[in-house]
Length: 495
Image 1 (cartoon, rainbow, N blue to C red):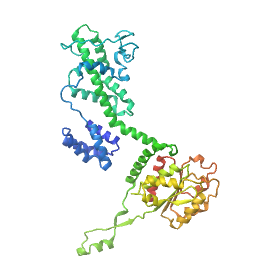
Image 2: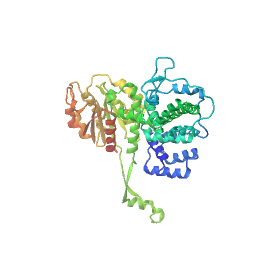
Image 3: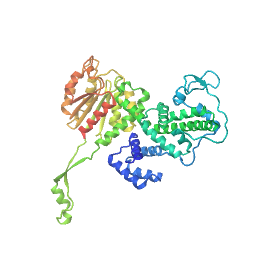
Image 4: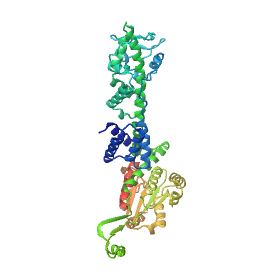
């Protein structure tokens, strides 16, 4: 299988572009037909075979430009001028210096000049003398493999060698930007940096001018190569690790308790919520009618074929129309559970494509309907207004249940799902379990989501022990991962 293409598909998947095995085979066929010569034709052809949605097409464009961002590799190496060699050496990062001249060449001395190098056979360090101007002239042949490669003046060979070394050290495993220097050094070592360093040291100590001239040239080309490898690693980081790092942060925020989330992370969590909602919408979207193939609707078939003198051309099958059920969301928005309510409401209203009509209610003591807020405002603005207007006051579940009974009891029937989000801490007031029983008997499902851990449900002023008897389902729900699971189950039950 084409390694270049499979690596590109891996990068696309890392950028959240869904690609199946069949689509990978289609892409292989595309590459066989189009080839890699015409970059524009390759991009257009693969864009027809791989991305499907508008978001995936945008991600594909970015990923393609990064993955196939080739420089002009024709001609000779773009090396610095001979006088720039010392400046290039001074610009090395600490981890790049670590293995030169036996591993101690990166330390600074207190005197002028500062740099030291280790003698080939001893442990003492001596100051490095300034490079002498040997001028143009005869130059020896390089002995080390990397030295020979550098002296061939072929960017093609060096690009291939760099890519192969990157594969060998697992460049795609880079996760964070601080690993750039580490992977630069690994790739240089894989290409033969140790042998090249020993050769440069030996050439500098030689008495023959052609050999010393070669040592200076190899040093200059070594620093040029280091910059090229560093640029290569940075491109690979942007291609492979940027999306990975973002996904790692998302995964962490999915699992962390919402009460511990800082305000500055709310925007990222909202992105995670919308992404999770989009995934659930794609998973649970379905037609409003389910057709049962094999059960012919005889009267309808005969009626629609009368124009054909009794000849049956169009068959009509029996179908079952699915009634869209109703969902009531009752959210405690007091200070202790406000963040949980924020993201559950965001979840529910992000699923408008597949979620039946949701009526939302908020309370801390008195309960009020906030559905209109969400119909006439953006989700973020509606949630902010809900928390601002209804988050004050002492929590009273009994009063909230009484208000809900007055507002909606006649509309609760066997197609209704009621979701209550709250910690059930009632400040030792009347829990009104009689209303809970009445709702339980009338609705299809009553789900209670409690952000507290289960071992805290029966402690202090919590009324969960009494409410549990009148819930079809009661779950601990204090993270986005829990919310995703609960909403997914809810969608399966109401579709």
